[in-house]
Length: 500
Image 1 (cartoon, one colour):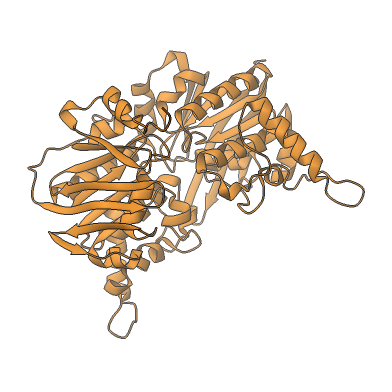
Image 2 (cartoon, rainbow, N blue to C red; image 1 turned 120 degrees about the horizontal axis):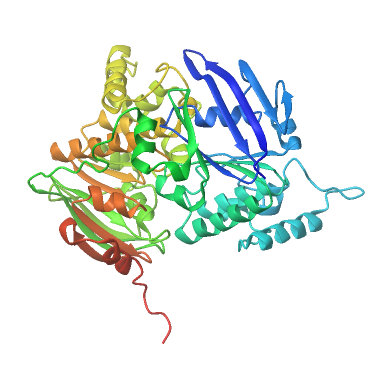
């Protein structure tokens, strides 16, 4: 214990037009949890990808267990004992849990794969971690939170002594987060060193021993967690004090813009009724699986409705597809930005332009490059998107900047209703404030804004009115002035009585 097992000095890494890492130092001891913190684009994930062999550094030294290594690759890093759980899940959705865990390390018999043994080993691993997932289950059939736990189990199956967790709790329920912290405590006792990257700073006090802070690709400082506090950490991350974490503004409530009546879609959207007014932000709260995401998707036309009516400016409208919704001025920034919100292999410019081709093309269908550039530059400027070039692939951006691109593509349209599903998931504290300010600006302009969030402080801090869902239905509504976490949770656990 307390042995330095990772030492990185003077690490540099550049991409076209961007220096992602600039003379960065980092160390990790056995049996400790080191929080690696910084804003989106600070270089945290890039540094860990260098350590895990995903990226090759331009210069600097890397020592692992006292031995200096030149160019690492993922296979060599894994053999040394380094495992990484990426922020964006990286699994084969069509394969089973067991097949994903042993992908690339399959157990073979005399003439074929030993599937029985792999299933047995996967089950033992799940049981040891106290994770209730059947190894036979196809990963794509699992909710995102369960997929995250499989990703964690997969990393631990390599007997890693250095475990990198990049936003591991972003999709987990409260119970699963507690399970993860229990697993982390057990790994610490075994001498495993853990690098923990998270924007959910309130989690740090439960597990973290030391903190390393980065800013703009540079090392800022390293300290014991017990010797600091969240305000100091935030100030060091952003280089300034954040005066207001939840900058909520007051506007006069205007006319009714949007109304949903008796909406039903599948098992998780049942008889939904609500209204949105100009000059307010409405937050949708509830536990994971409450039906909030499904409600936004049904409104947006991404999922088929079985019944219900939708009214815009007092007139009933028909939405049978996402195209219908967009044409009516009703848009959605989805929960899974990588899967549903972006084309990561296309440029940032293309991602912003794609849903706005009707605005940037002339009557012959030819793109007006000047108009396209104006729209893209405005989105970048308004949202402070950090990028090297509009022509860079969207997948090269940090998670927070990807989220901003998702939001930015809708700003070019004169949208009347904007729905945000978990808009600040995986985004640092300063970028969160920028998203809140954007929502406030939309509110000020008279646009109807609704957002789904699993973060109760965020709901309480930003929403003027809070709608709570449980088990596919709306169980209550609270004005901001009367709302508390206790009241919200009481409504969020108001399940139907199914047993006498």
